[in-house]
Structure formats: structure tokens, C-alpha cells
Length: 320
Ligand code: F6P
Image (cartoon, rainbow, N blue to C red; front, side):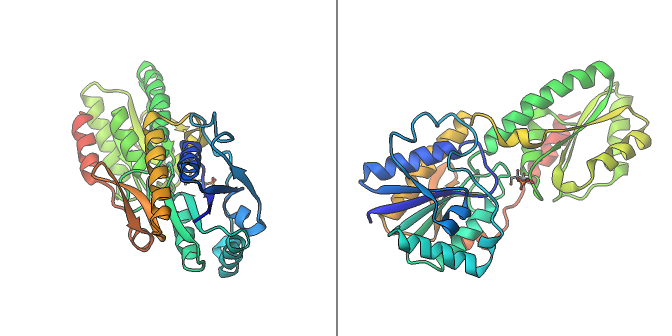
């Protein structure tokens, strides 16, 4: 193998740049040439890339976002788009491709892997942490920390005003972010799409807390549960409390990656290049039981990662 490609795809995640740096430098240490395709799958559809070298990926380790840029490509979701991407790889004599992204990108990586002679490997990077087969994705820890810093500040004003705050966090249709953030800010209530809840239960919790003298509180809600504006109104009216909504939003996607996100990026980057060097395609670098391993992309794409419901129960015990 002489030449590999690299692409960052889907929502950006803090640590993607660290992964670009790691893949490039490890690959170059093996004498491989690295092409960085621009704007996610779009770069493979339009044959747009930069040559990546150990020098031109300098100074990016600590930066959020992705220097290659990213996008969500409707065209690549079609069979014709995947075929075009495969042609681009062949045209440029690219024998291996590293795809850095979340769940959707891993599905794209599998589709492309089935269409091309090049070996395709994935690196899981998403703030949502919803990729099956790996305990953690690059960027998750950074997004959790960003939200925790913000909610700690919200706690100050909640306490001062005896107010209830509903804080909406990202995570698409899954509750991994909400659960870890909720546990680590000491939330009184966590709402995630995976666990059914009723308005009555929320109100009851607030009433029980109120009777104990706890007049303020934080309700961490995953964006996937639906309309938090409506929920806020219902809580305020139902519990007779002063309540406010705060949406953490896209700030969670940006900012400097934490040391943990950088560490994963470095280790996944090395693993991905090693997989290509060993001629193993159709796989994804992953974290399992504290070890860096690889999993079959078919497995990644045909299973759904489960939420650790124990953390939900623990949060309730700790928020007394
Ligand atoms: O997948 C990462 C994520 O930030 C989700 O948490 C969120 O639902 C989604 O992307 C937003 O997507 P977009 O960037 O297309 O608005």
C-alpha cells in the first residue's frame, strides 16, 4: 500500500483534528502518502482533496472542528453517490480510506467498503457517543465537559432564585450525553428518549424536593425527548414553580478537545492505520474494556448501543 485517503464526515466533534494529525503522522511514518478529502463525502464526490503531511497537520491537536471541513451529504446516501466515491478512490490510486465520524458515517463507510477495492476503516468520532461497538467516541468527553461547565453556572443562578431549570443538551435521538451530563452535574431529573417518563413523575419529584427544603433544581433533558419549551410550561404550571429553559446547543460541538478526547484520537488514529497496513478493511477502531480493539463495520451498523440504565438509578439516589 502506497497511498491512503482520510475524510471527516457528519457532525464535527472536538478531537477530529487530533485524529487527522495522528492518522497522517502514523501513516507517513510507514512511508504512506495521505490525501485529505474535503467537506466529508462531498470531497469524494467532487474529487477535492489536499495532500496531508506531518508538517501541515502541525498546530491542530488542540483545536476543535476539523481542518478538512465536513458536511452531511444527501448524494452519498444514494447508491450512485457511493459508486462515484469509489471511482474517485480508484482514480487517485487510493488503496485505503480512513473515515472519521459518527454512526451515520460508519454506515457510509460500510456502504463504500462494499463498493470499492480500497480498504475502508472507521474511527468513531461524535459528541453523541451512539456508535455501537465502542464504549466511547472521540468528542463525547469534550461535549460532556462543555455542558457541565455551563450547567454548574446555571446551578448558581437556580439556587439564588429558587428556580427550576430545564437544560436541553444535544444527542440527536439518544440519551448518552444527557445521562452522563446529568449524573455529573447532580441533576434532580434526567429525561432521555430511551426511558419513558410522565409529567406527574417530574412534578412529584419536584414536590418531594420542595418539601425537603430543596427549592431549586436542574432537569437535564436530551433534545431527543421532543419539545422542551412545552415541557417547561407544563412543569411550571403543574408544580407551581418558577422555571426557565436553557439550551446548550451547538457550543457542545466546538471548543478545544479534552485530554481524553485527544487520547482516544491518537490511539484510534494509530489503530486505523495499523489495520490498513495489515490489509484489514471493513473494520472500525474501538474502545472496549479500556483496550483499543477493532470491530467489524457490519456489526457496528447492525446493532444499537444500549444506554447504561444503572446510571439513571444512581443519579436518582445521589440527587436526594
Ligand atoms: O450528531 C451530532 C449532533 O450535534 C447531534 O447531537 C445533533 O442532533 C445533530 O448533530 C445536529 O445536526 P446538524 O449539525 O445537521 O444541525
